[in-house]
Image (cartoon, rainbow, N blue to C red; front, top):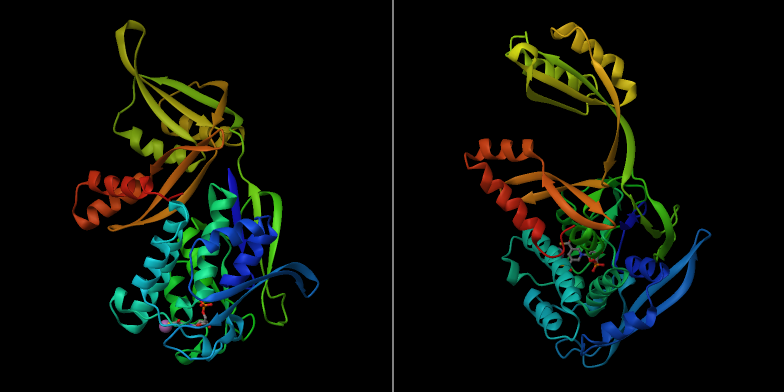
Length: 411
Ligand SMILES: O=C([S-])c1cc(C(=O)S)c[n+]([C@@H]2O[C@H](COP(=O)(O)O)[C@@H](O)[C@H]2O)c1
Ligand code: NI
């Protein structure tokens, strides 16, 4: 499975993201050509160059806009987004942005991903400012440089054709920042809204390391946030930020592979036939077997000698758990003998994601075969808990999970 892993030790902004993805190998000319499909009426320049921060070299992106929007100033003015300039306000709202994207010649996947990222920002702004979604006025986030950061992110992510995007915990920084609203605390309120439910780290430096745009790129793409992961790294990209900080102001993105092949493992079946035990005990014994490391416990109805109806108890274990599992069988059941045989188990690579349904969050197990996701399974216990809490049929919970999992863009 091809994976992008965002290492956000110094946060993420729209331009750091573009820098890191270009550094990973996204073709610069392709990005320029795709962005031109937006037919923006504001002149802009995309400056892409090699740069370094604290000895780490990577790619730096600056979007420079030449404002000639009628409701601003008569004279053309130039602004660099990174300066958080008060001069670069363009008060577009979500509908304006949607129109620009929908009327462009970009492909549908890029359009949808761009819209999903903007929607994350818009929802957060609506919440923070207490306004309906379509009445929110973007300030910085609606400016041309942000449109390029966001659509550019969608273009690059699409270009890389990964199966899954993961991220580390996200450093948001600290202090205060000056923007169109005046002076606001860091993390900016919109950033906080967008990163709800993601693991966030605060205050490594007294500056804004994660912006609403950076946060929204993560929120719209990342399946799993984790600081612990196994990845076979193929490439790494560094996106250079604009500040001089005590730590390198860079975003690192890894491109790698996880669980390329199915795994094979030797395991053991421990088995015993029982014809003389109170059947009430099986449930209790099963719990004890799992507690001692059993990977699976199953019972089959069998007929033993002299026509005796009986139960075959089978327990799948790794060798290290053999002793403790046999111990449970001999102490808790009526068995006086256990058969053991080696089996080879062939397992599909799998991972777990948490999805938010309208009823609550559910863990889902994805399984992959020959690099492709072939199946997924919602965690039964989560569905059961939700069905009980909400007093709804459990099938409805499963339906909701399937709806989300089958939707585009879901990993
Ligand atoms: O544009 C708006 S409304 C805006 C809202 C907020 C809130 O938290 S509300 C914050 N900001 C700040 O603007 C700059 C630019 O952000 P980008 O995501 O466009 O890079 C940044 O400092 C934000 O915190 C803008
Ligand atoms: Ni705002």
